[in-house]
Image 1 (cartoon, rainbow, N blue to C red):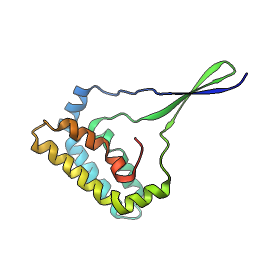
Image 2 (image 1 turned 180 degrees about the horizontal axis):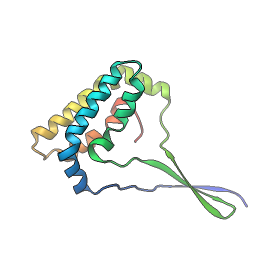
Image 3 (image 1 turned 45 degrees about the vertical axis):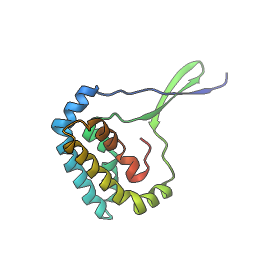
Amino acid sequence: MSNQTIPVRVENPGPGCLVRVLYFIFIGLWLGLIWVLVAWFFNLTIIGLPIGLAMINRIPQIMTLRPVRVQTSVEVRDGAPVVRQAPLRQRPFLLRALYFILIGFWFSLLWMLLAWLLTGISLGLGLPLAFWMFDRVPVITTLARI
């Protein structure tokens, strides 16, 4: 019997929209700001750069409770299904490093400041757009697939 691999898209919805909005308003905004400042401090040092980038990649979870996406595949082995989950496949490291050095480092800071301003100036009406912007910070910083 041959083994087949069947890719499956499994959604991990995480907390509901109301919970995410309340978390963002009462915890995510101030915790996210502290998190980003610490991450940027680490990014300024060569030794702390890996920690800073890992922290930036976690901003969507810290600020908005966005669930982590994983690639799920189901393989049938000897008639029994085997489910495997792995992180999403990323773009080549050299491309991501070059992008971060030339664009991502400074543009992501502007992106996050714009998202915070949008949240404050719009008195909450810009929350959907701010959520989207905070969720995209890893993409803007290092072209990470999220």
